[in-house]
Image (cartoon, rainbow, N blue to C red; front, side, top):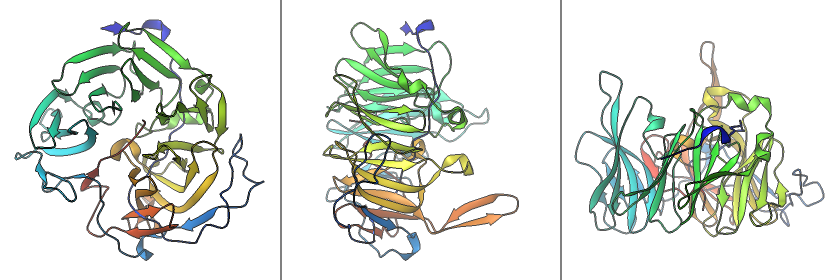
Length: 398
């Protein structure tokens, strides 16, 4: 076990807004995509398509083509293949992640009188065989899930965190622990990438970016500019996601105050930045696009909504498509957005805001939707609830 000691300086960082649900409907792309220069100034380019998404007004579309865990039937649904049973007990299932030859998921017992519950992190193979990697007992669900954890690119190892202090790297095939680190004190913690040699993780709500070496066990700060955050970021909830990084292309998203910067791994050069309060949250499966979300203007219900999503070219930052509406971006809970393919997003959107004197504003008319970058259109996914009933296989960092 390696204690990080006093060398680990935590910092606070903005929340990344994220998405749930399905296709877009809307206007066609108006000419070329707008470019995003440093600081997010797109004024010199022609405006890209902007699609206004009102969930109730969208046409119906088919079910997702990617796998999902159904909370009611407790099955792993794989379109075009037979479904697999995740559990036959009263336990709940969630947090589905793709791994080599199968899937990782969490299985949770009902709450006990002492307000504790056991959570099992399990693996199920494509043939249906299961084994347990870890059993965790915690008072908070944030301590006992795959929320702030990441599977390696080859799908053979996973970096598990408790969301605030510890990191464990496990080999998925047998649960063997390959690495273990402990922060000196509790702090928001999210693992965002895992290679054969290093775990990459953020501390203090997406603040400084660190690496932990699996061979030497040494921990070092890779980027400290993320420490220069706006003081208002300290209020972000624990549902805040960490900036997405993509080691496959050697590009990382790091938080810099009110912006996200895309940084080249080889020389740490800033390639482009987002606009104010706009944060990179996910790379597409082919690594060519990124999704960004605006931080909510208000503190409504733990910051679960965003009014604008942008799909940008990952290399240049040019905007390919802008979505406006009311989107669920409670990313830590649901792990979204989900990419159905390299040009299609699955999200959750709402139709309008309502307000109660005691409760304040809240969104209504929620639907799971599919949005296509190429078609510039969205559609509803009937009888499919990404928010509460189904957990999609999701891709975070690569």
